[in-house]
Length: 112
Image 1: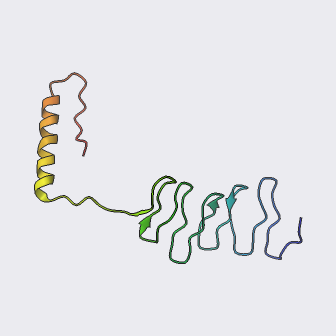
Image 2: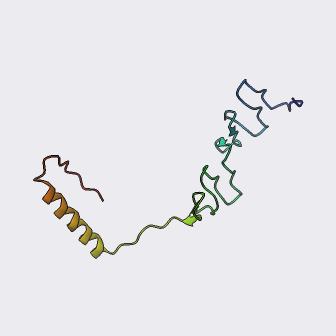
Image 3: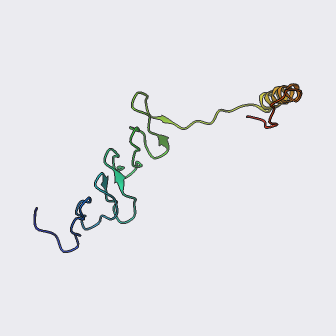
């Protein structure tokens, strides 16, 4: 084991020694810098203008979602619906729920 820097903590049985700016995390985590959380072994720390990725994520800037392994990272998009479409959908849901009222095991709850 190499010599320790003054601010580095010795390792517990199932931990690794921490660097000066690191804190937290078990053997399979990277200790975070002072103002970030400890990351898992497969998580990549963000670049300056990126966020750290989850295990299955890759790619994307700060305002994008990293894709899973087999998809590309894409911007998070909200589906834009016109008021007309929304009202139509609500009508259909209402009709469905009314028709279900006669059924034996109906829990009155609208799924959107």
